Length: 325
Ligand code: DP6
Image (cartoon, rainbow, N blue to C red):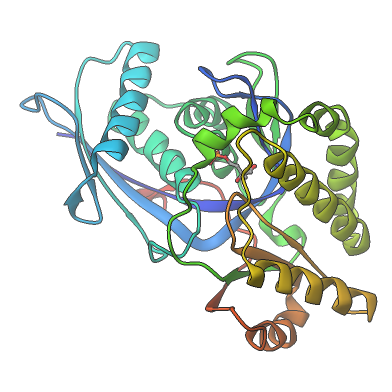
């Protein structure tokens, strides 16, 4: 009875994935770049047993809610189909970051799940193959397989759409100060949001400039150029949120405190502090700086009305098996 435990960290997109070219295979409309978040991870155990007559999905020691169960089983069916596997799994999964903090867990969850179920089935995949598989569970999950700063090459089909590391975690000691301004789960999931992207007249413009932003972001990371990183990730974030706001129906994730943090960060940077922000599909805001500024920036962020709490994450490593440690 193989029992395998895998761990993968969440990631924050610096250049965003928003909208699919092919929904069924999660082929994104544009490539993206992210940083893995050290210390914010999902730990998943996959157990295969001949007596199982269906998949059992346990999240935080409780049977998964129906929508999660369906999404995970759909992914496992896809995996079985692609790799000619005939057994079911018991999957036990927990996040070490508290639920209800607004931190997306699908990236770390499907990355850890992909590594756990392949290993439990005796399948040894390369990093690129594992990344492709994770992508089928959640697009951003393919970026939680490699370590450090990661690029997801959009590609045009299953084979060409996968992620790879562009720099290891130690390359640039950035810190993501994750500012929680809303603890409830967002009302419109990314899954639904991606489908709305095409309804915005701005999506095609966003996509047509994506290669330039990817190249600038890559360059800023490779040369540790914080000013360029700041300009490019805020621009990319604003472009994604502009698409969201102009979708039909519109998606407006920001709360007043989101905007208050954005305005403060812009002012601080004008005054010479190297700091910038990005926002995923939610109200919470990721404020990035180099490690030496973490305390000063955290103190300032705490004073902004509406800030509930702040977590910190450095660049994280690749997905791994518990036995690797
Ligand atoms: C705004 O990867 O969560 O965080 O594939 O439907 O699970 P699904 O979507 P997901 O979308 C991520 C959207 C984003 C930007 C990003 O992470 O690139």
